[in-house]
Image 1: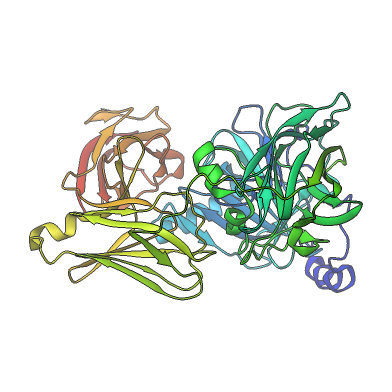
Image 2: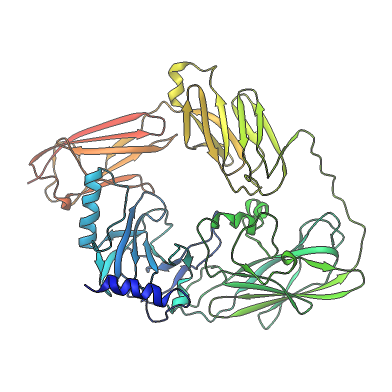
Amino acid sequence: MKHFFLFFLLSCSIYGQSKYPQDYFRNPLDIPIVLAGTFAELRSTHFHGGLDIKTQQKVGLKVYAAAEGYVSRIKISHYGYGKAIYITHPNGYTTVYGHLQKLSNRLEEYIKQCQYDKESFEVEVFPHTEELLIQPNEVIAYSGNTGSSGGPHLHFEIRDNEERPMNPLLFGLQVKDTKAPYVSAIFAYPKDKNAIINGNNKRTQLRLIPQKSGDYTVEEITAYGKIGFGVTSYDKQDLAPNNNGVSNIQTIYNGNRSFEIDFKRFSFEETKHIKRFIDYDYFKTKKSRIQKLFIEPNNPLSMYKNVNDNGYILVEDSTANVYKIRIRDYHNNETWVTIPVKGKPETIVQDSISDHTNKSLIYSDKTTNLNSGLVSVNFYENTLYDDTYIDFKVSSDTLFLHEDKIPIQKNFYINYDLSNYKTEHLNKIFIANLHGYYKKPSYITTTRKGKILSAKSKKFGTYALAMDTVAPTIKPINFQDKKWLSKYRYLKVKITDDLSGISKYRASVNGNWILMEYDYKTNTLIHDFNDNIVKDTKNELKIIVTDNVGNSSTFEAIFYRK
């Protein structure tokens, strides 16, 4: 590969990124690609950035480099992608491999040296271009379940030279899929107070009628004014039961294109705006994602195209209209929904008149500050998508800040004045989000400046002060004090904290730092004796675990090895 980088420079200028090479990237596993998650699939707070490839419910499968290149980044973290490798290729694309169990021997040796140098399990490094060259078909890692993975699988991405994730299926990777997408619900939305749908001026679910062909019709609706539609739809592949995301949605009104969204590529900066794309209120209350086939203000998603009047249709009096939705997966299996629309002005049925009494108005285009007693909340410009009335109430140290049903695009800031609290308690107090039926406190990152406690959040809800004075617990799993561990490969310890949560930990043997991998899903710390750091017969183990408000516990034990 001595001519790799000359080839890299030439190919970037000649090849560019004007097309997708079909035979360049290989399947990163030795087994057929079966998907647990598709590209741009709708997640709670983002569009999915790659493919989730099933690993037969196992960990430890060989992961191959999709093509030759060089390792441009390795990131090891407790959450997110867990253990992840980034490989940059001569054609300018970068592939990403996430949730890995471990790296290949030479990459594992490299990253462990970095971890020991920094004395940290979590590291992020950017090797030089010629430091870790990768050969075609080289095994770079083994599949796992690390980070925020919900089960064993390989997260695989292809990014362009601007670090934007793209659908890997564009590059010729094969997935068996002969099944058309299916639709579970259709909704109609009024654009403004003058629009009418079946006599209402509110979101209206329509009666979906499946056809033998696999397509759908909807019972004729009456409408007047500007309206939009929303669809709940999924795709399935042949070899998996998962409800996956679709690839493209188009709409046609009276024979003319009205709207299209193409899930081919997006930037990480815009992925948070999924909250604007879906009906966030419906998602939070019904746990189902409606994809809105119209574009509301302050929606910057780049995946829209061929959009007329932001996807809304104008329904006039005494007209017969047809609205069609075409939903496709990547393999061009498609499903159509036909909606007959009859133009008819009607008297609007008013359920109730909106009452904004005792509510606070948050402006979308300027800063708004709310204050009550010792609590203040700051909303800066563009925190919300629309000017919105919200509930704001403070009772003692509990902040009632509306319900989590309104999409938020930027953090707002919560501040508590702790002047009335005793000085000795200040370091143990944090701001918590109270969630669930029992309003269990959940730590959110809290900072203190003097006697002002601050935290930021991207969701409405109930917040309160909480105090944590109890230190974490540390318990050995597979050993006891003064035990011989010569035949053991791993040293395992369980760490837990009941309130504010684990912030950091440090382990040492005979005064020297040792690497212990932390799996938050099982609350375990694991040291691999194959690191060859522990070489003495008698060894003094010391582990210090600290929670998010500074409470610390220390565990000490002696073990022996030959």
